[in-house]
Length: 583
Ligand code: AMP
Image 1 (cartoon, rainbow, N blue to C red):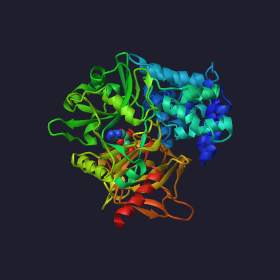
Image 2 (tube, helix red, strand yellow; image 1 turned 120 degrees about the vertical axis):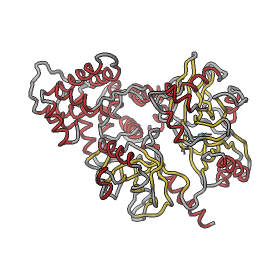
Image 3 (tube, rainbow, N blue to C red; image 1 turned 90 degrees about the vertical axis):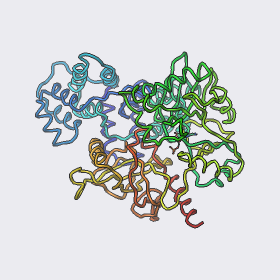
Image 4 (tube, rainbow, N blue to C red; image 1 turned 90 degrees about the horizontal axis):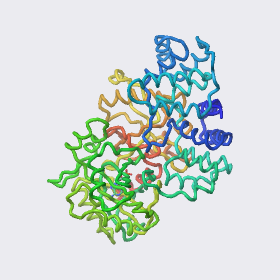
């Protein structure tokens, strides 16, 4: 199918302000395409060419895209740069220059979705001597053959700035709408997606034969979407909900999903990004210490002081997330892996088994000597709230975040936040000791002493999983280092949008809106009611806001905006905070 169909839909998506309309536009697009093109369009709409676990990124720098625009349109570097400075968006520059192209090419071909996709794929995998020139030529060829509106998206794509903000739930809804005219198939499609983590492939299978999604199982080296935890404020409430349960230490490190087969190991992050090359000691341990041939299991890796038994904070562990100097850093700060669940073992899918059985299987694989890199997470079966509290206090005193309580009878629930796992962190006294992850939906131009940074703070939102919307909860103006202010301005200015993304619900207007893409962690003193914020707001009633919010740590690159704290969690935290105050 011609690329103009996809570019037309992108342009409509950019102009809409309603999430429902967004779903409708995508559903209509899908219904006009053959399954193979739906697959490619799912990737392209989300600004990628493959699911994140494949680790294939186009990732071209702006300079190279500028060069490709020059080459395709015949305008000079100076002219392109000048226009870019004025317009702030290379897509619009390419569009304008294509419309009044200086050189008319003799052979222009109509672009197809497949041609555009294949070219971006070639650009992504080109490496070695001469690859830079090849990338520029490939991109220039696309722009040369593009209509102005096609050029807008072709130029934006390789620098990761489509500015459409389309999350997985939007695509899942659109697929269901395409066939059913409503959301009734969403859960069915999502279940398959949770096992396969490749939305393009799922879309393809669903378009071809919806019934085929039933046959999808787990596959080694294809990550399963991680189970997520709910939160409750007290040990009593946990016992009330779960009865006797397993409590485990809650480690604050990298969540890893590890896959092993035929002597090979792959490791994926919670966002399903490939992390294998960053963690050599963990790869070796899985090869040599894990007593099985094939497995998919999960654990938390963190820096740990063997001598003192002290767990290092996340800020230390995160320094291991790097592409260069991996071996040196691994020697300086080796990690331990605390395994806590297993999904697949030697040909058998264990996801449907109750946790108690999965834990037994996991224990049989890992030595109890506590001398290797692989450990089993510390866990105890408890029957009373008092026992939970004792373990909780013990974990906290050893530098851990709190605990995870788990339903011993529950299966592994991929991709969902169900009450099979419940986290308990320190109680809410004086300040909220639990942090909140917010998605940035806008930012402020700096005033006064901040003018020189061009950054005054961000407008933050939490995620409403009921309707896939981002609802604001705070303006965050403190906690940033000077370096962070500079880097936030740089990063955010690249994803500015003229009006709020249709998935953003806000009464407040920041200086600049941005596509919801980045997550930061904030601490606050309290959750209060506020008429200005839309988190939890119903009709004329006030919503919820954070009092004295400040950023802590670094940008949360391990979280997608949909992984931000949810509106439901905020409401629970608000209630439990009242509970603490009144008691
Ligand atoms: P949070 O990120 O606060 O929502 O907490 C959930 C995260 O805690 C999981 O994604 C894991 O990365 C981490 N975690 C730490 N210890 C455990 C454990 N014993 N079981 C499950 N998850 C754990």
